Amino acid sequence: MDNLENFNYIKLMKIYDFDAHALRGNNFFKGILDYRKKILPIHKHLVKKAKDFCCVLCGSQRSKLFLEWEAGYQLFQCPVCNAVSANIAADARHIDDVYNNEIYYQKFEQEILKHYAYRKKTQGAERFDYVIKRLKLNPKKARILDVGCGAGYFLSVLKDRKVAGRGLEVNPAQVRYCQELGLDVAGSDLADEPDNHYDVITMFDVLEHLTEPIATVTTVCRKLKPGGYLIAYTPNIHSLAYRLMGSKQNTLLPFEHFCFFNKPSFQYLAKKTGFAIHTLEVYGLDVMDYLLMKEYEDGIDYTVKLKDFMNVLQACVDKLEFGNHFRLTLKKKK
Image 1 (cartoon, rainbow, N blue to C red):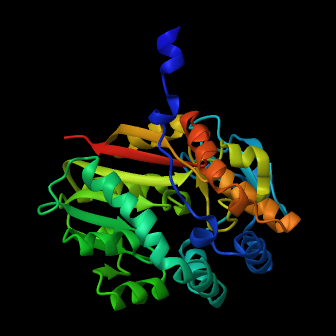
Image 2 (tube, one colour; image 1 turned 60 degrees about the vertical axis):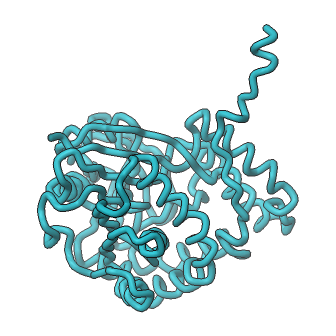
Image 3 (cartoon, helix red, strand yellow; image 1 turned 30 degrees about the horizontal axis):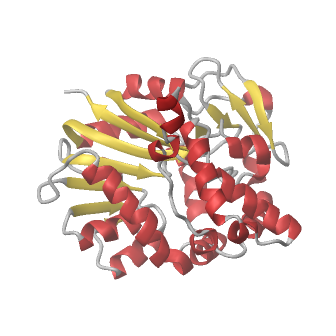
């Protein structure tokens, strides 16, 4: 009993010291609601009827309703692979419409550029540690490809620390921004990259955007050296944030996020694409996101007044694996 009483469980937890407003901005939640309101009339014609649903991951037409939003937009869970996906008819033209328009550019400027320095210092540096240090890679020899690199936080940290990093990005504005920073970023296709070339390929908040995850991840596997790693961060829809916020959760981005995973669906993905699961961890921003929602509703700065509590409570949520983001590491089979 004495040993148990003296045991400090907090020491086992990873506690991130995030400033909500520096990371997200002062009007983050309102911005999410406004963005959804703007895109709904543009893309609502893509919503399919429930009877026409087809799982994005495995192609099964069997389903169980998981969540409803507006204008008939729904998420369904597949009983075959366990993935949750949207009833959206998306193709290459739709993807281009989403990421190459004025509304998305405004979102990019408001949500990302204003907070670039803070996100690079926190998320970019954390990702460097998670990729390079955790996997014990030789930074002088490692070849890293960041697919869906966005504004390039991670690549910028790699450049600062003299690690060879290249990025691919579908949004032209973000490609130009990264190139202006001197980063090796292109708008070209993943299929054009050399085979058996990279030690690690990262996909930070990308898996959920894929309309054909099996095909894309199979291509990723081909681009990796034998024994190479795919590291993906992706939302966890089975999280505390979704329990508390439902369709208000900010990682629900209709017409952008097509597929949500859990452990069984990750196993399905790995089996179909030439990988084995190396690690699967859960870290999130559930408490922050919930408090930002309540700030918008109540007009009280909860994330400022409860900052220390927010970060420690999030560590507890993560320890219970209820956080709203997965960190998946897949290893290519030799």
